[in-house]
Length: 253
Image (cartoon, rainbow, N blue to C red; front, side):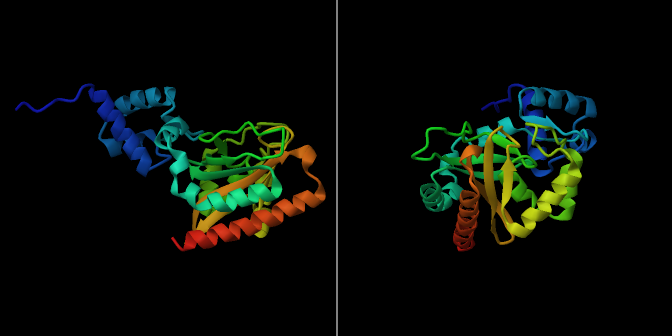
């Protein structure tokens, strides 16, 4: 029987590049070409096409990584994710106690990918966020909580390849100011997004750690007009309590 031949060898070459970037993110063109045994010109043409359709993203330092669109496809069934199932009862309880939007996310190619969202029951103003979207680490509560767990080398590498773009007038775009805030997160174990991604929205976030590895992060998001000093303190306390409960559960798995 004649062996079936593949249709479209460029697709096979593209798969080599995607496989390489999955294992070696933030690689240069030369490294990708060498690692996939393609010529630099061929690799560049395929990379340009993959960038065009969102499967690959190019960093400011001209290295490449997998794109958020590809990650969304890979996580099309996010609600069945093991982390979602493990955290669900704790986040639902948190939702009942604060009656605000709860988000759960994971680290995905230097961004936070939303895995779950629990809406408040008694509020008329709801968040526009959706499961499957991504947020930058430097401008989100979950993201800054994750950054606080990076090693000094990982943090420096993140800053080298990430352009701190403003999403609102409050977004931190100064690396020194961001470093100061990350140090505060390391001390308090909670991170804030004070209108940095969306105007009039305040978030409190924390990481989920197990076996000294980042498992994910979660946050409470609410319109800033509902944020009184007393309620802020309550949310921080409950976020820390929820973090401890979930991490204890994750350690047992």
